[in-house]
Amino acid sequence: MKTKTITLYTLAELKTLSEDPESPVFMDAHSVALSTLSDRAIYGNWWDSVEVTINEDGFSLDSFDIYHREIHITKETVCYWDVARRLLKNWGHESPIYRLTHDYLVLATKQRREWLTIERQSYPMTTRYDWDESDEARELINDFLSDLKQEYLSLLTSEYEYLTSEEYITDFAEANDFYFDKYGNITSDES
Image (tube, rainbow, N blue to C red; front, side, top):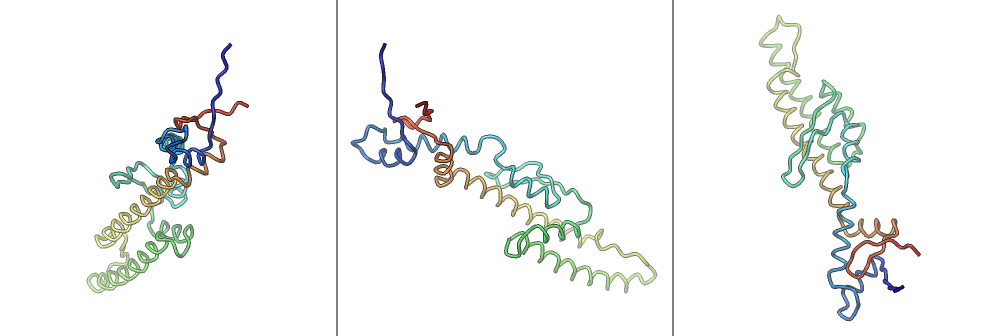
């Protein structure tokens, strides 16, 4: 029977040793390990936490592509005023989504007042004025949704960048007690 001894390394040890030309670890071992762990970190639905947030805001995440900066969402509620109120409730005052929503509501309220004044002067016999169905409202809502989608896309991009960052991958490796061979391949510590 032949016995072979294999030395296993933590990710931190791999990083240090791969920088030393005299060490038994291959120079790109740390990079190989990072790449493998990065793939594991984003395996599956890595975007779930952001999708839950989007759902709580009253939207469904239909699809997205962070590389091409595209996102498609569907609103679950009919009224954008309700959506805006939910967004204000769900997000902190300092968040970009809160500020965007607040600014939208201020502008929508101002435009609605101006529109109603003109409509009442132009059509004094009408008792029902529906600003929400006006071209002005649709344009404002479309602009708001476009900006909101970009904020959601930023959240998805940030989540992806964090999950593939060396900081997260290092924490991920330590938390899961991963060990690596001298080539940077993940191995199990059976001892």
